[in-house]
Amino acid sequence: MLAVILLTPACGKKTPQPGNEDLEGIWECIKGCEAEMLEFNIEDERQVFFFYTGQRMYRSGTWKLEKNRLTLAYDDEETLTYPLALKNDTLVLGDNKMVFTACIPAEEDPCDLSSLFALMDDISFSQPLLEDFPWNIPGDSGVEEVIVNGQMVETIVKLEGDFSAIGRTAGVIADELRKLGYEADPLMASEVVTGYRKENCVVLFRPGIDDEDDADAEVPFAVYFGKLP
Image (cartoon, rainbow, N blue to C red):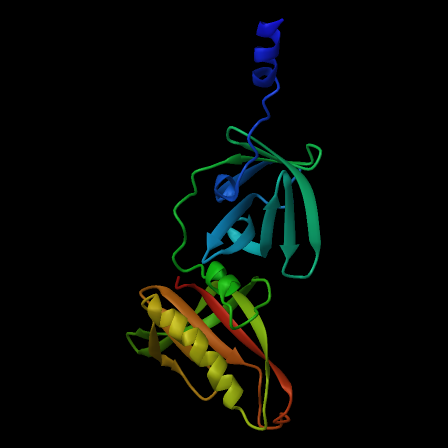
């Protein structure tokens, strides 16, 4: 009888609940997912997730793990909660609805700045869209234009009687780019656009304003990024 009593707690021991550090990293979908890859990121106490398809991010948000329930708060304000099970390198969300396996990520594209814009605290950007844009490069006969197969994110800037808010927004983004080693490209400087370049990685600012815009309007500010062909 004493032996049975002593063995009962051991037999009934609960499986340890997964913690935040157990999820952090990149997971590859093997069943029922809306994307090919899911990344859980913890940066400065902020927990952010990214869904990737074709190595391009198309949806993101914040996440919270409480006991065995995972809540995903998407940037488009949709919030979903799933029961979570983690066994070895397999992650299951819902009633076997989505199944992932831990993976070693492929070499990251240094020109893909999706994560940078998603994590910026001062500016709220839209989800990245595939978008081509022109870029000027030096050529044998002068300046030549090439087309970059890149991505675009957009934010809305509220003007305050003049266009200084546009300059402040551009300045915040430019500061982050300089930290990564980007420099202004004189071949992409005009009254309309500003370009930054780091080797073959390029970023283009294009505010949606013209001379007829109301100085108190809300205007789009687009940022294009990609790799020179």
